Image 1 (cartoon, rainbow, N blue to C red):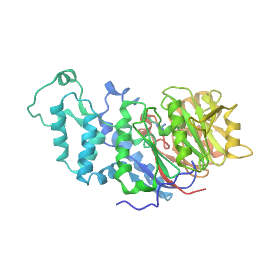
Image 2: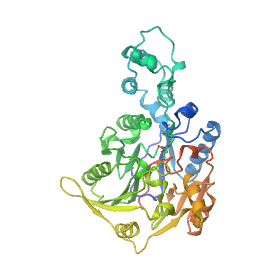
Image 3: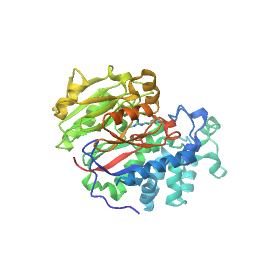
Length: 409
Ligand SMILES: NC(=[NH2+])NCCC[C@H](N)C(=O)O
């Protein structure tokens, strides 16, 4: 049952979190095999049952602190109770699978349309394995032979539990992202349907700030809502410079409160694919940072201008943040407790990927002991969750959550 929230509202990284969208990992994770791990953006294969327990633990901690949890899959099921929506979504998904055989496409569409909203929601996330499709007599095309060894008609979406990335609520608007990799593109297509048809998005009050079919990639793990008037966007392996400029222009045009964007360039590499894997905000004036990249970050100030935004290179990130947030000082809390090796190991396990649920209160993985201690020494309340399986997809509590509503500071 969907409870009502007023409308989307995220004007900071740290305001009390009242509503969040999660995805409980499901069957899609059991479709990972060593052969396709890399393509599906995983480094290892999680044990699903344990992973779900860990994820439920995460959701419980959020609820325990007064946050309503919405699940992606339930919302997807909700919108597909409308037969027309179900039909359109099935068609769009199947057509984007590149099967190379129109007759097969039609058969799969007909097969899916007969299923309930719940079953279709599951298949659109977990994928359609060839063995789950009845072997009806049909003419084989070249593509069928070429792809004979490939197990799926519709690919699974194992990264969907990182709900942070396909979309971001910024202010009262929704940014639906153009994902860098094919493995994650359907996640955003589905989010667009949720935006169009699910009542919780209250489309008429929710400006669309970016769309998944825009040309330049941008992903949610790179977006940090520093304050009402200033947003940080990482320029990373996943988020392009032009994507940042285009989103900035839309923000300036569609949200009168947003006056500047700080672009933060991080090294382009898998270990830190998004800004939030090395840098997150934990309190009004405190950030946690992976020391291994601290000297390699570059900051640029982006402000409105006529045709394209004005871009100014800044001297250093700390001073830039201080100025933008109008603070006398900002504190960078180094993850890893001051040891280079510990810091690198814990970063790989998402020590810096903290989810603030109120000013000075964060959720992190329990395994990152040194980083958690350091946060506590700086007066941060650290709520720990288990994440031995969850972490295998290379993401932590922040990646696993898409805030919908935060109390205004
Ligand atoms: N916001 C984040 N840091 N998300 C992490 C996403 C990890 C996921 N396996 C990917 O590579 O896309």
